[in-house]
Length: 173
Picture (tube, helix red, strand yellow):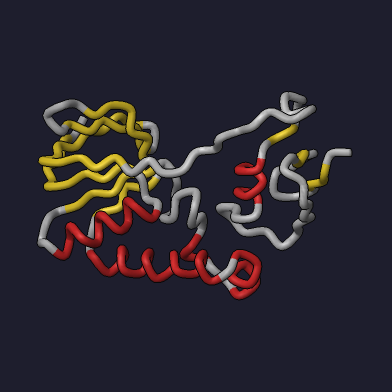
C-alpha cells in the first residue's frame, strides 16, 4: 500500500468539493480530490464536462454553471483520484481508499468531507414495488454519466425502469 502526503484531501467531487479544491489551491496548498465516480460533478452536476446544448436547454442555466466550476477546478492543478472509494478516514488524516481493485492510502494534514446530496424518499402507494424509484433516481436518469438521447419523461414522482435505467422510463399507472 502506497502512502502520499498532501495538505488537504477532499472526499467528493461535487460542487462543494470542487469549490473547496479551487480555494485551497489559490492558497498554494496541495489538494487531492477523491470520488467514486469517473467524472467531476457529483449528483448535482453529473457529467458536467460533457455538457451539450440539448442537456443545457433541458436542465437550465443553473446546471450549466457547473461547467464553469469544473473548468476552474481543472485549471487549479489539484489532483483528482477518480474511481476512488474511500472506506476509512482516521483522526490523524490517513485516508484509505480502493481504486482499480487496489487498496491505497494518502496522508493529509486536513480532510474535507463533501459527500453531497442524498435522496430523501417519501412513502406513496407502490413505492416498495420492484423497479420503482423515487424522484432523485428519476432526476439522475435525466443526467446520466453517459448522456443518452432516448428519453421518455414523466411528470410523476415515481417512475419505473424496465430494461435500462437510461432508456424505457415510463410512469406507473
